[in-house]
Image (cartoon, rainbow, N blue to C red; front, top):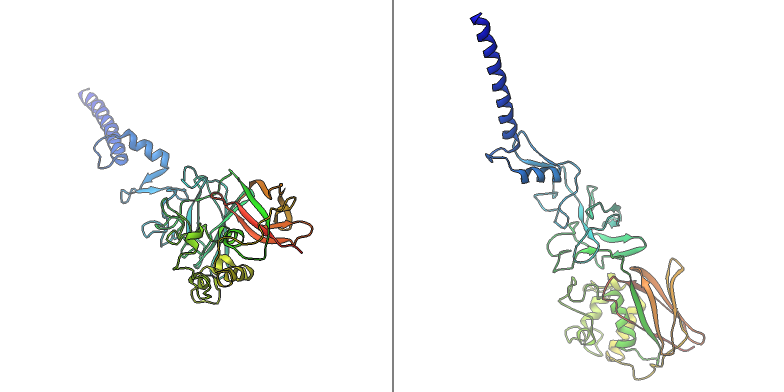
Length: 357
């Protein structure tokens, strides 16, 4: 009888000890090294969908999870090498301040060999690729009929790297759905080339995305006549002016040709400097052209159109960012056709001149 009672007591004791050991091990496994239960840590683990590695005690992110928007994912500690090596990666936002990721944007990356990779931004606005690509890259991003292009070539695939698309440098990569109006004036050409009528529209369309405050080449702004005619860039009458060398595709210094890409525009800028001594205003012409048809076309189709008023002014409403052909015409005048890139902010009014037939 005594033996039976002792056996029952021993079984109950062992059972309670087993429960105690189970709870101790459970708490120790979840909060190793803390010595206490941390509710905030538990919420963090659930929200981040990560787990503790039983072998080394380190926290591992769930495989395939998108994370760290705005961070440089191509650094050596993240995806700069190894099995999880990214060849390109970054974040695209809804605005330049980076207040929210742009979901569903399409990013097209073309490498030095013409190989193209098309990516779609995820729920955080992140994009990345493990496909082997060789820099430099040509990059564009599109969203619901809007397209923005990187004005120059990217030397590496780390979009969020220091000195690239970070606040205070070239801003965040973004596509806004708040489209802007495009305004301008059409006047009659007097045959002379001037900064106001002829050169400023070219620079505004092709150069100031970089050469402005906050741009990648903010050290050499080209937004005003004074900035453009800085003696370091232009010597009136001199065909060897530095800005002409920068725009000349045959020059060793011709780094800006990739954005100009127009011999007619280059010739006009050269004639302005050499023949017209980089004058700000034309001494002839300037008469407003009313009832001129102003159109923006993509792939041969008219996307936006307007007609100039009595003062030669026009407005194209809510133009989506992207590349267009700007066509201006009126009976009795030569039709003007030129490429135009619509930006998402700091859109300068156009000054267009038409020559009489």
